[in-house]
Image (cartoon, rainbow, N blue to C red; front, side, top):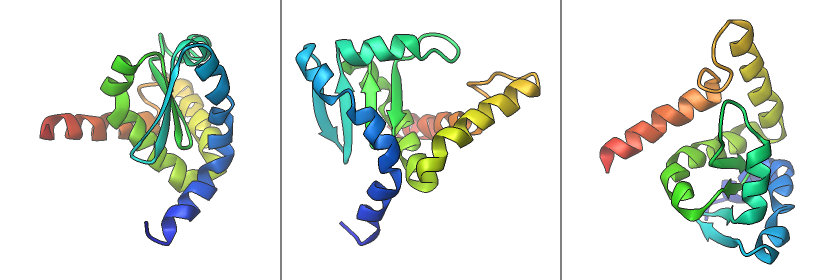
Length: 137
């Protein structure tokens, strides 16, 4: 661990704290919590319940909040992991400003007549890097 690692976690922590709210409800509802590459992954009924209610442009399989990734189930989380890890890095860069910046990017895309999810700059970056990771495999 280098010197900047604790600072990245601290900078993203306000968003991580939101995701941590599902830690115990997920365990109690039969979900799973595990740490993968320094990121807490939460799956199961509680996470699925939240994801069903946070629809941007259709069903949501995974969602990143700082260093917490919520997934409907482990299979879909495995599929989306590289994409969600890009969002983790974005949270490390933007810190507490990530969520407002993300929402602003969606709004700007919508005002331009574009898709608020696919044309969001943060999603475009995540899809681009996810594609590169998938190509390397």
